[in-house]
Image 1 (cartoon, helix red, strand yellow):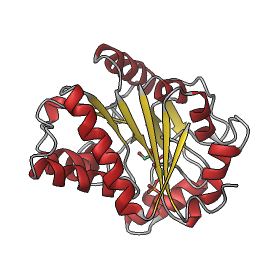
Image 2 (cartoon, helix red, strand yellow; image 1 turned 135 degrees about the horizontal axis):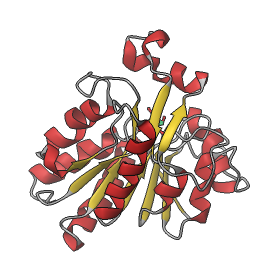
Image 3 (cartoon, rainbow, N blue to C red; image 1 turned 135 degrees about the vertical axis):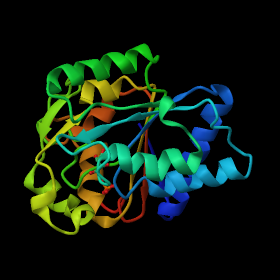
Length: 243
Ligand code: F6R
């Protein structure tokens, strides 16, 4: 695992956007795995700026979703499909035909989960998966004690994650769904390159456990230690508890 310490979130976004642009130069139809939440926004902004400046060609790229709330209508403004459309696809000029995501509205979530793993495999697998990290060490929505070999499936959000995400629902935790469909840790580990971005001191404990702690399901992100090509990009706050 390589750890890159950057001065601030903006530089982290720029660094990762350049890695994506470089991947697209080598493989124009690369499948980019994207995360939601606040942390990756500087990456998407930097990538959109590169596209506008003619420094990245995204015209053949494909985008894959990491996780989705269960039970929110797909057109709900906070469904991750809507968020990604707004924050990634539209600014990059990518149409929904190049988008892969799990169906959080399916009656049979188990079948929808298996179908998503199959769709990712049929698409040739994710080339670069961008990840955020929860304060409890979750990646995707694999909360602590998720199996390190897990596949895409339904998970129950912890109270802490629902509290953390209430800011997207007018601060009202009652509106935050209890369940999500998320790529499993085993699914995430199949991506060819994992890039985790963490910014801010509130992520410092989770980053230290990921990078320097034991490989343990209690910190799902520690599974990155198993991956042959994992990059952790952190600002000084998030790096502050590394030895
Ligand atoms: C969301 C996801 C989550 C977030 C994590 C951090 O798609 O995968 O693991 O990355 O909850 O969220 P932020 O970036 O908002 O702190």
